[in-house]
Figure (tube, rainbow, N blue to C red):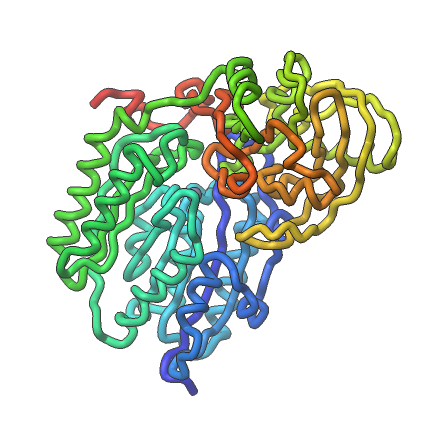
Length: 485
Ligand SMILES: [Zn+2]
């Protein structure tokens, strides 16, 4: 038997409380649900990164338990939440001797009646493994850190970049875990809650205040005795009483240093609080005019309906505005519309149809009547080379050519048209378009190789930048920017 047996679990979903559509186990199946040895085939994401660090180590046996991943969305229904707890329990209890656990979760997952899904999962793992088995938890930095998460694990690390590099986060988790397991380090963690929230327009780590904050964490990691530093700019769509940003530092058995440095990181975020609120999104008509005036293919970000931020993808705001506009080029627009996707598939390619699309799911929008020609139908699981999971299930899908819009209508959210491959799999050439509407406010990396610019449109929806007008019920209004101090 190998010297160390390391259990491996990944369950990852980001919840948006303003998307009323529950996330079910079938939403995880759309990205592939992997159990037991199947997990070892994963080459992507946190699990892929963690496994890559274990290659060639004869002293390690990986005990793969579960790998589940879904697009961000509404809260998990009770069945999905129970499903993961059950499989984590069964997996760990039947695994035999376990010397350590690598736990890859999200951090911003909530379920019906359960605010802290990751806390519950981490606490369950701890209760099964006992107090002495090292657990390293890795998270998306948009998570909301809780006492239960931190107290259930020995060390914790989050993504270093937005757009994220989950593969690297898996590697970082392995590099925290291995020395601990070999008795070379003894992690001491401390964290600070930061009483603020911000819209996502300053979330990229390539510049602005977010770069300044994350750079400080990297600098802190270079100081003596520090094992890891993580910054958590929580995503602003979870309606929780303990919402807020956080900073966490792991030292090698230096608890006071961890306290001091997590405070330093928290203080810096607080100093930069006004800069994080800076908005760049333009009113819809202005955004379209600006995109039309720029050279080359321009990405038009639908900030309010950001599928990667857990919205339903059913907005018709930019679709309607483009159809109404003077814009004479051609725009790629995605919309999640299960009924319309079925109707278009029944109509078939080459047919001229008039139908209503969009606004079936979130309650934020009105449907739009469109007339056009169906140019492609299909869907199901399609290989679009998505770095989180290459094959993504679109459900039924179709392309409708309508006015100045090439409309991608899908039953499932998939990747919300955020990858050019979501169009090219249907024979559409993205480069022949002038505008590409994307359902993300940050993940422009997929279109970047063929796009010349990004314009953010200030659109309404569960991911909107105007946080104050979202229907919050439980969020403490003592948070900045609701309260100034
Ligand atoms: Zn994230």
